[in-house]
Amino acid sequence: STLFDSVELAPRDPILGLNEQYNADTRPGKVNLGVGVYYDDNGRIPLLAAVRKAETARIEAAAARGYLPIEGIPGYNKGAQALLLGADSPLAAAGRVLTVQALGGTGALKIGADFLRQLLPGAKAYISDPSWENHRALFERAGFTVENYAYYDAATRGLNFDGMLAALQAMPAQSVVVLHACCHNPTGVDPTPEQWKQIAAVVKERGLVPFLDIAYQGFGAGLQEDAEVVRLFAGMDITMLVSSSFSKSFSLYGERVGALTVIAGNKDEATRVLSQLKRVIRTNYSNPPTHGGTVVSSVLNSPELFALWEEELAGMRDRIRLMRAQLVEKIKAAGATQDFSFVLKQRGMFSYSGLNAAQVDRLREEHGVYAVGSGRICVAALNSGNIDKVAKAIAAVL
Ligand code: PMP
Image 1 (cartoon, helix red, strand yellow):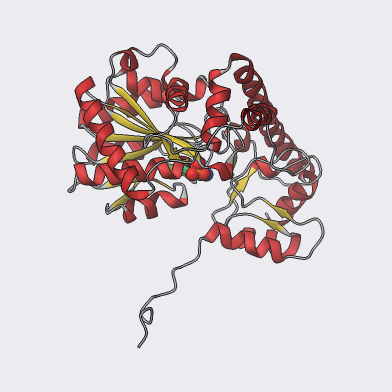
Image 2 (cartoon, helix red, strand yellow; image 1 turned 90 degrees about the vertical axis):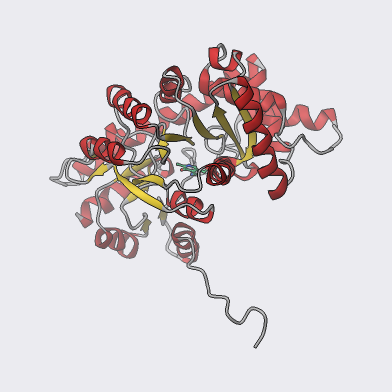
C-alpha cells in the first residue's frame, strides 16, 4: 500500500460547492445569492476609493518588504482596537487590552481558539444554532467539543431569546461562548440592546468566556453603533476575546485582514496573554503579511481617508437596506400572499429567507437563482439588474 492509501476524501465546503455549481451553469441571467460577499449595483466586488488611495501611496513609497513583528503592524492593531472600544477606552489606557493582526476574522478565531484550548483544556465551546458554517469546524479542529446554544426561532423568524438565555444559564463556568456581535451570519437576526444587556449579565454571572465575533462592523447601523455590544461587555469588566474582520468593511477579502483583541483582567495578564498569542502565531505562520495590513492601517490612521472609508461603508450599508426594502415590495408585487417584511428587520449582508430546502432547489433548478440550502440569501448580492428576477422567482416557489 502507498503512504496516502488510507486518506479519506474530506467533504467539500458546501458554499464553495454551490459556487462551483453556479460557475458551471450556462444559463444567462443566473444569480448567485449563496456567496458571503458584498457586490455593488453593477454586480462587482468594489475596490474602495479609500483603499485605492492608500495603495497608491504605498506603492509610491516603494517601501522594503521586511518581516513584520509577530503581532503585526502596531498602527493597525491600535486602529483595529479603537474601532472596537472607541479611541478613549479606559481599559486600553490601563494596559488591559491587546490586539494582534490576524489572517482575516478566521485567522483571529483560530489564534484565539488555539490559545483558549491550551488555557482551558476541559472547556466546551458553544456556538449559536445556526452559526457561520466554519465556527464549529474551526473550534473542533482546535480540539474543542462544540455544542449549539438556542438562537434562531423559525416560527417567529426572530430570536429565541428565552432559549438562548436558558442555554447560557446552563453552561458550566469557563465555557467558551461564541457570540456574533452584530449582523448575525447566517440569519441576520440580532438581539436588541436590552436583550444584549441581559445576555452580558448572564455571561458575567456564570463566569463564561465570551468570544465576540465581529465580521460585519459597519454593515448594521454604523461603525460606532455596531461596536456597542463589544463596548457593553468591556464596560461590564468582562474578560473576553474579540475577533474582528475587515474583509467586508474594506472589501479586502483576499488580503486576509483581521485582528484578535483580548481584554485581560490587568496589565500584567495582558502582557502574558500577548506572549502566548505570539507563540501561537510564530508556530503557525511566523508573522502576518504586509500589504492588506498596511493599507488598512493607513486608512484607520488618516482622518481624511477614514472619513472617505466611513462614507463608502455607509454607501454599502444603505444599498443593502434599499435591496431589503425592494425585495419585500417586489415579492409582494409578484403576487405572494406571505409577508416578507421580516427581511427589513434583519441586519447585515444576509437574510434567512424562510425558504426550505425544496424551495431553494426549485429556485436553482427552475430559475437559476442560487441560495444556500438553509434558505440563507446574500442580500448584498442583489442589485437593480437582478432583483426583479429574484423576487419573481421567490414568489413562484412559495
Ligand atoms: N465570522 C463570521 C461570522 C463570518 O461570517 C466570517 C466570514 N464571512 C468570518 C468570521 C471570517 O471572516 P474572514 O473572511 O475575514 O476570515
